[in-house]
Length: 199
Image (tube, rainbow, N blue to C red; front, side, top):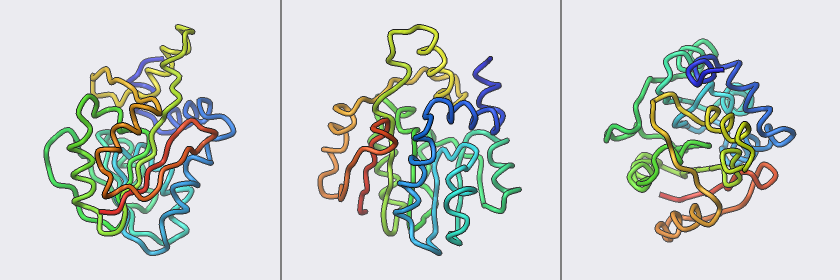
């Protein structure tokens, strides 16, 4: 199964991610949704098929905008009643302002220099920035087939071959933002680590 096929179709992408996270799949979204109050303006970066919105935030009547490189994901989001824009976050462009600026499972795409995208998120957020990032990665397994599948599942389709975080390197990154970090904790059965930042 090609990377482009996996990333192109929201249903395929979501099914494979559900397989990757197993019984913790819903927990990763619930942890973030619990931090977002009703009627908040939300900006979701690298939103993918916008599962966070369609299953967890829509009922909170948030004003949701998703940004993603994938045109199909954005079209699907708009059909579901959200707002979205095709957006290349690698371009050094200011982000739209929102109460809550979120990135889940995508910060590794900006390695080896993720600080600028975090700075832009903090500049755009009126209330909080929420980042959740995998720290136990399928790509790190010694089993070649599983590592290959993990690489395909986490490829944004932009041709880059990203590095990955573990918990130590992710904590090291956020130690550079001591005046902003309010909370940090493991979620999704320890597969991801969540950081709550105040701008």
